[in-house]
Image (cartoon, rainbow, N blue to C red; front, side, top):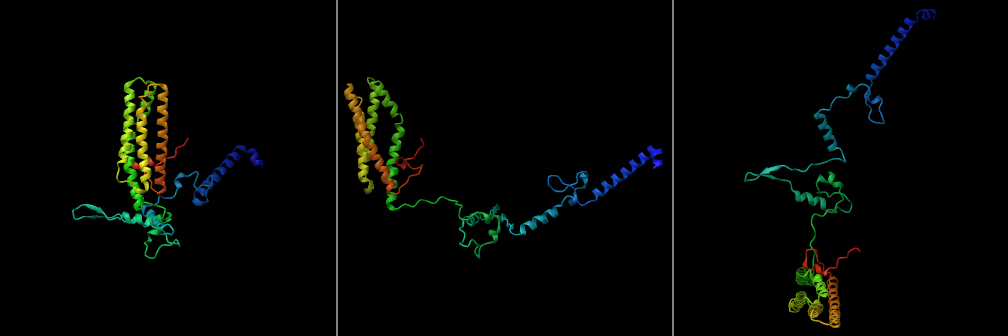
Length: 296
């Protein structure tokens, strides 16, 4: 101990050398440890922190292929890829031999009660598509089947519906014309416009009354509807001719009463189509007899 006290600088240098040797030993031993025993952060995969060159070798393409093959053949992940091979047609053109319709048929097929594949069913049920609930996929929209009477009513509704729809399109400005005539009753041009609309209502009612192909189950409702169109047209055409205020108000009241009758007969027609189970799509002219609920 006296020697260390008399030679402090030599003692310090010796101690430093010992520490250097000890640190080198720790670094070398740490680099030679297996990767799985090294320190990792946030519970991640163990990886060296001080030696980035010590990562494992890059897996070759052959090894990747072997791993992929093992994964494909290990249940329940077995996957059989569809055959997309092409053939050469007699014309020299390349054609695909993949049967897409058969593929869709397998997806849309109903499962058996036990939920197991049939004995003659291909192993494709073990593919990833087998995990899709079966019977829930539809690739086409089934055509609505109608009885003879329903088809007759359906054709009739489209027939008169096209006439009503065309009339509404040609007279889309009717509210503005009626409003203009009320505001300026002395204008002969505005009065004539109202009369023309009334005459058009009458002609449409007469067209309906002359129809021969009317289903017997709707004959009464059809005649009432045709009569209502004639009546509302006649009463509308009389409004501009009323000179005195009292006569003008009375003419409007008469017209309003006929409009109420037309609405009732129209609703009756709609109800009869519904009672017979006849429905019209948005592309059918008969959609004019379908009431679509709207939000307030």
